[in-house]
Image (tube, rainbow, N blue to C red; front, side, top):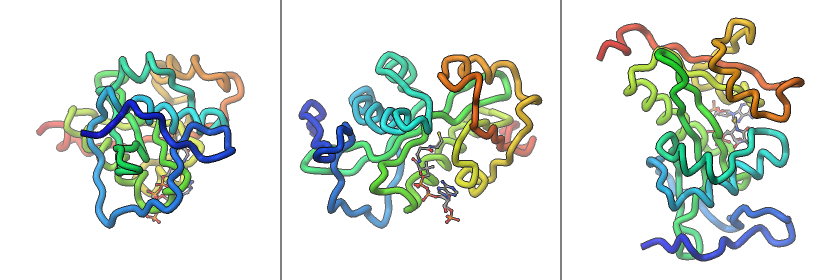
Length: 190
Ligand SMILES: CC(C)(COP(=O)(O)OP(=O)(O)OC[C@H]1O[C@@H](n2cnc3c(N)ncnc32)[C@H](O)[C@@H]1OP(=O)(O)O)[C@@H](O)C(=O)NCCC(=O)NCCS
């Protein structure tokens, strides 16, 4: 059984709570799985590392525990314990609208297809739920464009989108790009 209670080995001298992945090799094949309660510490470290850099919205443990069923993670064994190297969530906003949230890949393992793998699985989750659209706000529009999302005019966005935005410190000076993926109608009838 993985030992989730042991303290994570952080990047030395960095002030970061991220695990030190020096020397960790990404296996040729990896897959996301639905997150478990025990993953929250690792997810929190990843998400809040980027939130500290004002790249994403911070998520506290209360939010992560209460919304754990939204999330997927990719883990690797590091130092004998299962370690979260990436995470992302899919939240249902309305009858036709879902939102990809909190996609984060450990800095040491970016640009190797990990983020793509997580978001493709979240898109499949949205499709399986019968959603018509998948939305996201991001500072990495190129990444989401490579997965089929297109930029949307924020004036056309549903008011439900803004409920979450109102929790963001950048609410009045938002620099994120709204992006949308639309499923063809036949996908929603299955
Ligand atoms: C953005 C992020 C999730 C991408 O994950 P990743 O594992 O590095 O990306 P991948 O290797 O899966 O890249 C998938 C594709 O997107 C492209 N891509 C990745 N990051 C990109 C970026 N910042 N800008 C433009 N394109 C990008 C890649 O080139 C790749 O395209 P290709 O397959 O045609 O070469 C990751 O860099 C990250 O965690 N960033 C910090 C947090 C963040 O910005 N989250 C996103 C929104 S909340």
